[in-house]
Length: 205
Length: 205
DNA sequence: ACTCAAAACCTATACCTATTAGCTTTTAAG
DNA sequence: CTTAAAAGCTAATAGGTATAGGTTTTGAGT
Image (cartoon, rainbow over the protein chains, first blue to last red):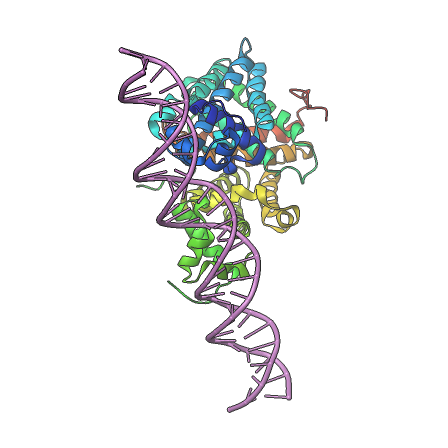
């Protein structure tokens, strides 16, 4: 279709559209090439293969999400910030399901790429939100991880339709869960919650 | 390799091994056929295609996880039950990463299949655990969903290596997070936490 | 034991996608 | 203008998916 010079960035953009339309697993060199009005092998001058193409989509998604997260928490603190951050992710996932899925595939990023990606930015925003709660330093990382886990887990399950078969709409639970996190983080701000014994033995490797 | 008569169940089993060894996305008819000492087309008498093969692996994983969850919470209540349930999932994911990934792909199950799968069993175990907290009926579903989201989210992020670049080992956060959920559910058992206004407008479609 | 039909496999084939190799056409710098 | 690199293209291989149609087992009924 559209010929306009292939660039790495354009491949990522086309791949991202494709992901949202057909699902991240259908982001394929052949289809992207088709949409760019170019033969498949031509793409190899710009990306090393399918893996890198998808990686670019993943990085694009992480960037976009970080941008939105930044906007969402700007000037807010406490529960408003928490709500804004969480909603920015959920809204993004609803508007761009394929990209959100791509962002979950950050697993496949090598260490250097991951470090230079927007990944760390996300952690910083989350930390910023948590700072508003004055969470005790010893609990901060845990809170960051819990927030990330719960938000990503909920969105994933919601997207996969896991909540479609039980009665209250997912949105209601979402509100309650955010409320719960707010409560919990408030509690963590005072006492550093003495570490309970590890709930089960680590494999001693 | 081993010839012993192909059955749907065996395909699922071989597929599950394959998933753990190479990753769920490498569960392919060709490779399963190879491992069964059979030609690829022969599999079509037992499954309708790649999609159904993977679906079988997903169902197998859901069954296994439900079995373990059942064992893990048997005779326990309160925080012990919570910990046991959560750990049963995390341990399963560590021992069978590919199957765990497969279980996350429940999205692709059609409604009937999903309903008759082990999916509902998981919800029941979670509910059972929550019952030990005497969570207010109005909050129960939300608690179930939060527990599911947090546990699955954490495990996914841990598996993807997201926690590898910050200092306290993931296991420590895991313990803290379970502790946090315990605290929260205890709080939810008393007051039904008046519903806060929805944190943001639903799309009014 | 014998038959014969279904079950379980196989071969052949067509179509995708991925990837490599090597050629041709632009394009823009000097 | 010239010319070298950039950007694309064609050709060709490999491996996975899927369908069609044939052959061999196997076991149920007689």
